[in-house]
Image 1 (spheres, rainbow, N blue to C red):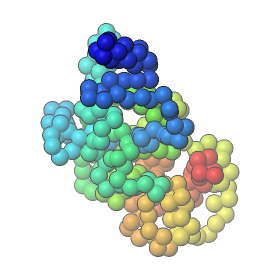
Image 2 (tube, rainbow, N blue to C red):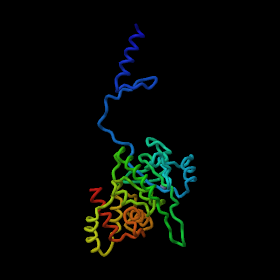
Image 3 (cartoon, helix red, strand yellow):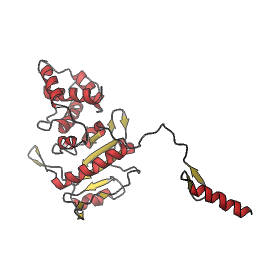
Image 4 (cartoon, rainbow, N blue to C red):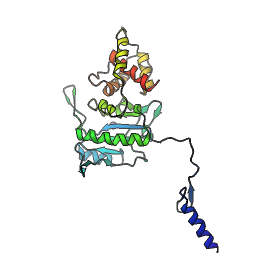
Length: 272
Ligand SMILES: [Zn+2]
């Protein structure tokens, strides 16, 4: 009789969708809380600065890792490209290091990382020559990013490059990364052209750049920067990271009127 009762209870529990068997105990998930949010808030892009073989060796070792790796010419099955997943999205990968965005630090905890196999740049004299990404690589990156963003409800302004979250020590994914093309497909932030023109007409009337205000605006948008009021090396590197993302025609690190206007338009769109 006792065993009969037990088997009836177990049968009833197993038949109920909200009761799950975890070996030595049951879980009842029928009381779902309203207060919750996705654990992943950021999508971070990188280049590996290594060839295909070395990228895979380094990123599957014990020191650094990333969720996804995209080769320049991805293999295909049934006409569809293959992305290499090295770490499950619900686990922490070690791709961001010391990092910051809009008050959050150590973004490994809350991000998904994608590495593109790309050599970065080589130096010719003092000039950096950057290597372009392949079309196939970017097409796969866009399909993958769109999926990650939708599943995790990642905000456009939280789709970032390594250089945005670690501007003092990183320059990847570099000035040839197609941020505008991605934004046109709904991936990441981009300012509206008319609003940039509007702010540019105002900024061009200013004789000098208020560096304290610039630093404050960069920080409001998300960057980690000291509010020193001085155009020091730290500030130039942050301005350069911003320009590599939003004004790739000139990423000298000098805060000109157009740079300020783009930042104004982004703040209006994403931070007001
Ligand atoms: Zn990186």
